[in-house]
Image 1 (cartoon, rainbow, N blue to C red):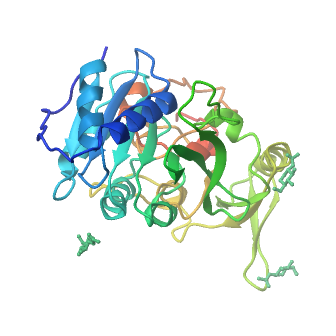
Image 2: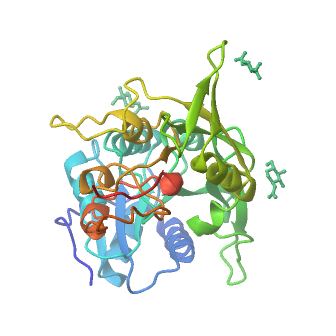
Length: 339
Ligand SMILES: *[C@@H]1O[C@H](CO)[C@@H](O)[C@H](O)[C@H]1NC(C)=O
Ligand SMILES: *[C@@H]1O[C@H](CO)[C@@H](O)[C@H](O)[C@H]1NC(C)=O
Ligand SMILES: *[C@@H]1O[C@H](CO)[C@@H](O)[C@H](O)[C@H]1NC(C)=O
């Protein structure tokens, strides 16, 4: 089921002679979204892209679940927030951005500030602003999946997909070319399956937040200040993960040396805070999964259950609906103990 979230505010606007442009854009976007009936699409546009008004019109006609947000003169951030947080199902949501680099920056800046990266949101950025790719590289954070098109000649587009490289930097890789003909194929998926994607971290160095807590983990601090996970059950686990998933790791200790809670003012402390604020990619320890922690980080499958306790999983869908999702924090957590 899909809902239209906000009123369509469509302002008729004609650029002479842009019907062909519009036709191309419609086919390109349809090809890249490969729409299924369970997909919701939110189109955010300003009027900088030739043909965009026709595209918008055509989309709202053919796709009931389309929401149109105009970004002129600036994107309405409260509407955007609604579009990004009102998830009622497990469906994917496509956000199609047809904007100047400037507006695109504003949108992703808001996503970062509200921690709205989500694996259920896929961003498709189509535009002709020469600064678009650079803008994305410094405004998109890990956790947002972004597809980008770049026009090379009048009807050939190169298609790129975002990924995090071995130096932990956001980059785009070419996944195919679109020529407008039916034979256009992508060599790699525009939005790769996140579970497959994170089977190979490309040798990245992940920062792991930890505090000493035996028998799970002992963190040793060397003379030069370097922290090393010395021994414990969790050290074996993370070493195994690191060789299977192709990453190395560096240990940090949270300033307060605590597990972490979500405080009344919304700030998050301890190891949970390190992950939430992205100082660390993951935390490893005996960490109890609670509703409030689940609202700010993701937990891996629990691998330790306290035999003397009753374990019950919180209502994950409720918190997931806030779309607070760092895909790499699958690894986070670790043990479930309900005391
Ligand atoms: C981009 O946005 C900033 C801040 O809103 C504004 O000052 C600037 O003029 C904009 N630049 C362009 C090229 O529109
Ligand atoms: C691990 O990452 C390195 C560096 O990116 C890469 O060369 C290598 O093929 C990867 N190893 C595996 C087993 O995937
Ligand atoms: C600290 O010392 C360890 C062990 O001698 C060494 O491996 C590491 O590179 C040093 N780190 C720094 C930042 O100097």
